[in-house]
Length: 182
Image 1 (cartoon, helix red, strand yellow):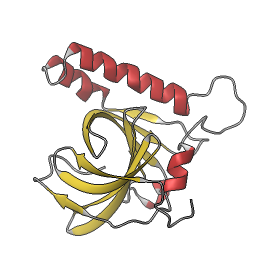
Image 2 (spheres, helix red, strand yellow; image 1 turned 60 degrees about the vertical axis):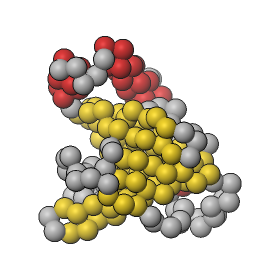
Image 3 (tube, helix red, strand yellow; image 1 turned 135 degrees about the vertical axis):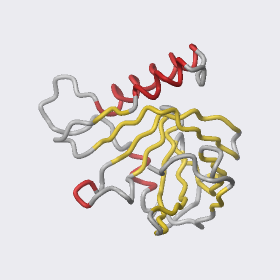
Image 4 (cartoon, helix red, strand yellow; image 1 turned 180 degrees about the vertical axis):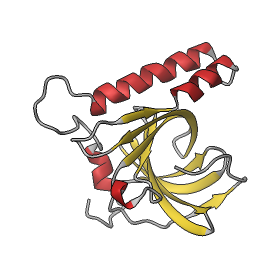
């Protein structure tokens, strides 16, 4: 696949947090889509990737400060839907991933605990989210005894292939944003 080819990619609609409908493409177990938002009076466009097998959504936030450009923001998400429409809902736990010589950060475990305590997650959903978070960290980021400073599998190779993909950016806002975009 060259940097502009969409051959072999299945079209899919992504519904992000019930707020945005976006045209995307699927390759293997990864969905890529572009979307936009306004922040501080400026319009921004963002590319996101849904790692279906991990239950995580990742992106390189366009609003990160210059020193953190190229870093990744990873969200634990609930993924549902069909082959043609993927519904992605943020589930509070986030991971910030910088360069391999920098430690990653896990964020918002307190918000996740509050959601579980307050009934926004069933006990089974809360347990599943913790298991998926640990699996994501172990599979993609945690090094065992390696001396090389690289991430074991991050970003996934398919994300790297999709990064230069060009396709029609088509997205609409369905409701007002619930929180600031990441």
